[in-house]
Amino acid sequence: MSIFKRLRDLAVSNVYALIEKAEDPVKMTDQYLRDMQEDVQDAEKSVAAQIALEKKFKALYEEQSELVAKREKQAHLAVEEGNLDLAKRVIEDKQNAEQKMNEYKERYEQNKAASENLRSKLDEMRKQVAALKDKRETLVARVNAAKAQKDINEKMSGFDSNTAMAGLKRMEEKTLQMEAEAEASGEVYKKEKSIDEEFENLGKDKKVEDELARLIEQHKK
Image (cartoon, rainbow, N blue to C red; front, side, top):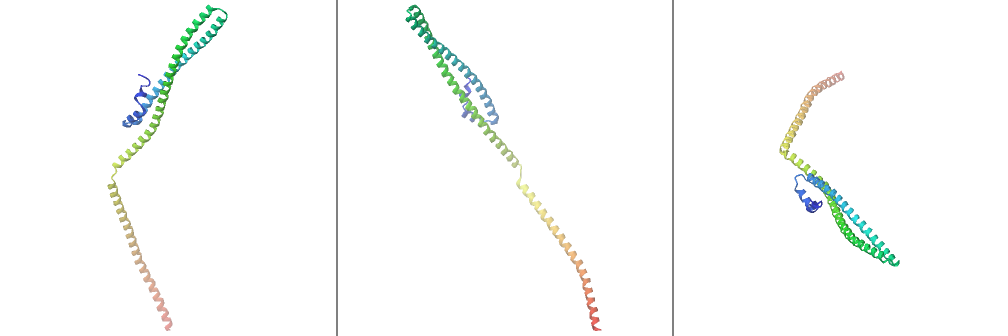
């Protein structure tokens, strides 16, 4: 399987669609994150290997390029010295070096392009992992809110407001009855107390009458 297969088959938008339909979106998101992070690690290794190839052919190309330049100078020097056999051998070696140089240059450019392509895909994978991580945080918040709402709804479904209100009504009536009884007992106490006070006042009135009669008798004398 290509290390970029998941990148092709599971674009972030498609992953989101699957997650939205999942029974447990958070668990599914975590699984996709683990899978994608593993793919990123594999891709990083492949990119590193490709870059190594790019550098290898670049070094071989530069080595042959330097050799071609060296043989070019040597050929001129051999001609100047009149050593045509040496000049011929140098030119032949130079041509071989040029052929290798061109081959290595082509391989270097091919591997460089492949490295850039892999780097681009690796960057895209990293962006998708980051986007999925952000999505996970949003999903966690939504799932927690949904669970809390579900819990409240379940509790509310078992809550009979009519029964509660009827019970409260009975308690109010009981309270009113208790208040009425307390008030009535207070009235009885007041009534009993007023009777006692009346008898006491009767005694006071008699004393006043007696004192008044005594004073009248004194004045008659």
